[in-house]
Length: 87
Image (cartoon, rainbow, N blue to C red):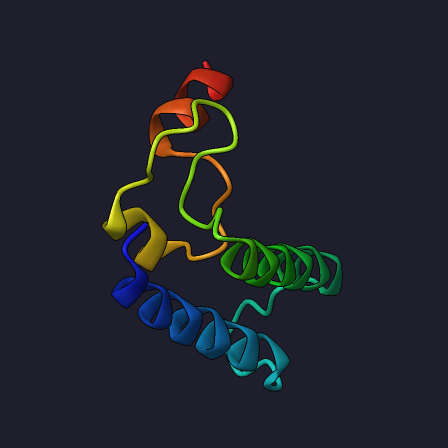
């Protein structure tokens, strides 16, 4: 992963974590269990950033697309591997 992009992903993770900590204002609030699960995934993503493994798919070891990481910055697997698992 390019070093200059890690700051962008770190900011996306920080924004997401802060939104999860805000009081629920939507019509369908997120269940607390799901909120805790995502928070754990976010913390894991911060650890991968620090280790230099962020953005590398845990299954195929290829670099994940930038768009996927911006949409789901805590993703651990690429869309191809996730699709194969769901099939």
